[in-house]
Length: 134
Image: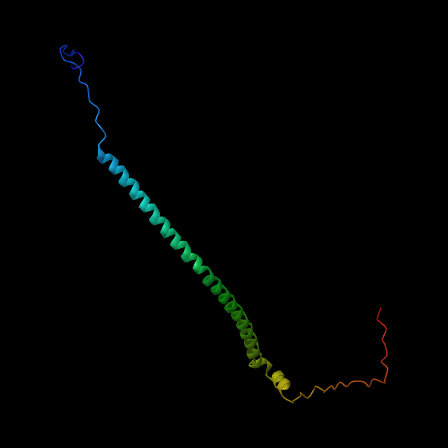
């Protein structure tokens, strides 16, 4: 409907005037730039503070790692000692080995056993060399 209508000939085309830049836009750009600069500077300061704090914690961490290693070695030594004590305890109180333990710790000897006493030979007596069995 509007496409078929022809514009009236007596009307002149309307020219639009360019608007002059308003000072508000310039100040808004300036304030945006200032705000971004402040945000960046604050973030840089916070980052520097964080990095400085981490750098101060590194020696503390190293000391803690050394202490942990010392404690781990102490735990290993204690576990070995505990295992040794446990095996000694279980051998000492083993009901099946009672007679053997009594013989080891006392002077009792079973009737069917004989004492063997080893003596050193005097240095003047030469020892005979035994040939190897081939």
